[in-house]
Length: 492
Image (cartoon, rainbow, N blue to C red):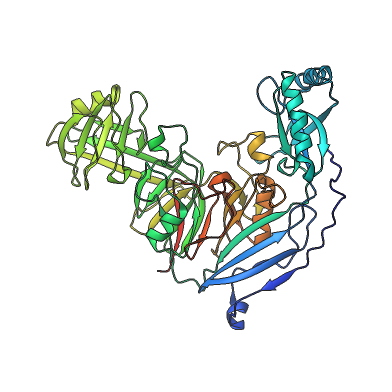
C-alpha cells in the first residue's frame, strides 16, 4: 500500500551525537560487542542521536532516538469478522456500506510479508480520510458519523500500520561484553509463579544491575494465576513451567547466554513400577491431567481432583482432596479424572513416587544439566539465526497480521558471535513520540546491532527495561505492568 507523506513531509535531519562516560581506550579497542556506527536501520535510515552510559564493567546502556513524526490518522472500517482487514470480496461489500453512509472510502491492498515458516498474505482494508497528526479530532468526528450509520470503525494512527514510516523511534539498548563482564545472568518469577510482578520489583529483590521483561504469561487463566509463564521456565536449575515444544528460548548459565529451542518431559514412576506422564508444571489443570506444583507456585492447587503431597525424598506423605496450599519444601502432584485415578491407585501414603524432569536442547539434541546455575526464559518468536533474518512466527504461535506486520513495543534479546548479550527495548504505541517495530523491523534492528542470533520476548505494554533500579524506557500503558518473569543481569 502506498502512502503519501503527511504534515508537510518533514525532512529527517537529526545529526549523530555521542555522549559517553570515560572508558579506557584499551578496553574500547578490545570490546567484543560495539554499538554500530552505521545509520539507524529502520525507515529511511535516518541518522540517530545516541547517549551512552557505562552501567558497570562490561555493561553499557545506549539511549537512542531516530526519525521524525510525519504520520497522521485515518478511520479504518472493520469487517463483519471484527478484524480490520478481509478478502477483496468482503472489503468491496464494506466499501458499498461506507458509500451508503455518505462517505468516500479507500480500498487498500495490504501484503503481509512472508516469514521463515509462513507465506505472505494479501488482504484488503477499507479506510476513510487522511488527516495530519494535529487533526486527530477530525478523524474522530468522521468515525462518530460512521458509527451512527451502523458501521464499526476505529481511528488508526498510520505509524502503527507496519508499512512505510519515518518514525520516530525511542530505543534503549544494553550491550554486555562477554570479555569484560564479571557478573552472571538469572531468571526471576518474582515472589511466586502465579502472581504477576513488575521488572522493577524483581530487579530490586535480586539486587540486579539490569532487568528486562521475559516471555509471555497466561492471560487466559484465572486472574490470580496470570503470572504463569507460557513456555519453559527454569530458575536456579528447577523447572517451574514446562516448554511449548520447539518454541524459542534463551538458556542462561553463569555469564553465558544461548538462544535455542527446547522441549521438556516430566514423568512420575510409582514404587509399583507404574509410570505416568506429568502434563504440566505450575499451571491450571485440564481434564484428565496430572500437574506438578512446586512451592514456588504461590497459589492453591485446583479444586475437583486429588492431590498427592510428596516430600523432598519422593515419599508420599498423604493424599488429600485438591484445593490446598503447597507446604514449603514439598511438591504436590495433582490429578483430575484419569489423573486422579492414577494417583489413587499408584501414589498411596508412604509409597515412593519418583519424579523425573528433562529439558532438551533441540539444536544439540542433548539434555540440559539442571544445576543451580541454569536459568531459562521462554521467548515468543525467533528473529535471527546464524546472522540471517529467520522469523519463526508460525512455529512460535504468532503468525497473525497483527503480530507480524503491525508495529508494537518490543523487548528483544540477541547474542553475538563471541557470546556477548544484547538487550533492547523499542517503545511504541505512542503517536508522535515512538512507533515501535514489526517482526521484520525487529529482526533487522537486531542484526544491525550485531546479533548472530536473536529472539523477540514479550512486548506491548509488558516492554520494560530497568537499569540501576530505574525504569529507563517508557511503557505504552503509561506505567510499568506486572509481568510473568524477567531476565536479570547480576553483579556476581
